[in-house]
Length: 492
Image 1 (cartoon, rainbow, N blue to C red):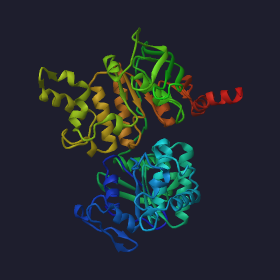
Image 2 (image 1 turned 30 degrees about the vertical axis):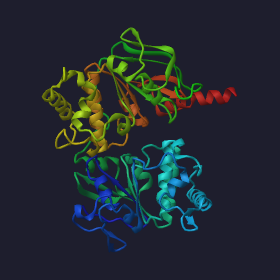
Image 3 (image 1 turned 180 degrees about the vertical axis):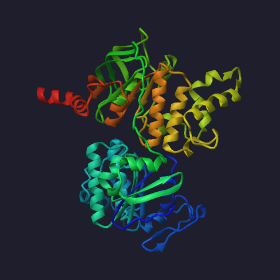
Image 4 (image 1 turned 90 degrees about the horizontal axis):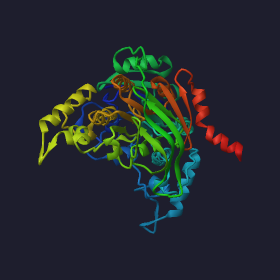
């Protein structure tokens, strides 16, 4: 692993899950001490190395990292988070709040970050929280700013804001190392790109001298002739129907989460759900799984029979599975083994009176791990040790073991590389060929168009239309995604 990063450039790092990106960044940011590796790391012509647990030492050397999984205190304000551990004081040990918030306000203004500096972080959306994490790093006057999947939770406007900030930093001589699975972003923002594969350096070259196909070929070690695998499936009759569905919040009783949502899902079909952030996509599928809000109107029908779903157990009893958007918080028990995570929803199959058939549990789990090609030395490895793509495969594996008739996938390829994405796409095709019906949410329009048979579009908690894939375009989807807001504007 050898490459150079120039002062004041935006340097992209790409590679499949397990390529070594996270390991490399943890070395550079002091998470892994110098005893764990050989070789040299040079900063401004001087060799640097960090002792165990010396993250602060890395920051003081001028290296700061913004992780994909945010490390903020949700109960503190924006300003308190930005200067946590470095609060300005007076009279020896009294925090100077005027100075703290004054510096916060100036910092946010300098970089064009529209964040209320006195707001509690837990009240902010994920996109705004990401900006707070970036502001925190900027306040430390970093020479090298490492951003690990910085746009995974940002909308288009926030992505543009972030890129503008990075260009400003570049002008100020700050070096940015930019890690992303969204290959198109490298061509929007980076000067140079480095490709890693299987823990080794493959190539470093000017971004202008490559393209998406070449990057993919270097990442996976082979040419990929198609982004989305083709399939031939005889789509059957509707198996799952939602009509005039309305859901109220259980936390705020006067808040409507969903209203007038209607659609059907056919046997062997992939129904894509598109919409802007905040459109109600995740609220819809989470409520259909019995884990959000309270249904106050409408009907849910499965195989011709009306059903009630008030909990995840109800959904599972009706052979419905959900792969959630937030796999780490909602999809996995991170400290538990891969084995336990895969088998958890299916324990009834392995347990008897005061007994668990561990051999059967292992054999069944191993089949799914092998089928999905989860990269791990064995199934006893804790889920937290896996890369993002392999963690996603574990979540999918556990629901496949339940033999679902309806499988809901909420942003199933978020934060994973192009090679792992392709494997998940092929798996989805295999499932529908076996008669499973899939509902798939995706924030990427290209993915929705590439994998769906039909597309339902949502806006502000409403379903605004369903498009057959033959007539669907990005323009039509976006028109429907803003339809409810436009109708309300015209009415007022």
